[in-house]
Image (tube, rainbow, N blue to C red; front, side, top):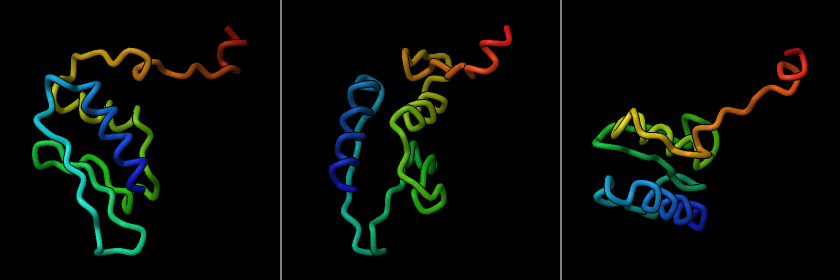
Length: 90
């Protein structure tokens, strides 16, 4: 998970470059498979153990944005996928 974590950290630093003070990666020796938790201002916004999976960058960006700047747009990360069946009915 370390490479994916590093990529996600880079994504967050790029998206929120003037808003984030730091992104910290700490290796875990606690659980087999590692620990992947994300905290913003002391609030846990993601836990791989709780969610049962690694997050998509879009999910993390939206959760961070909702805490630090709810009115901020995230461009393509905010675009909702339109259900093709619904679109064909309209």
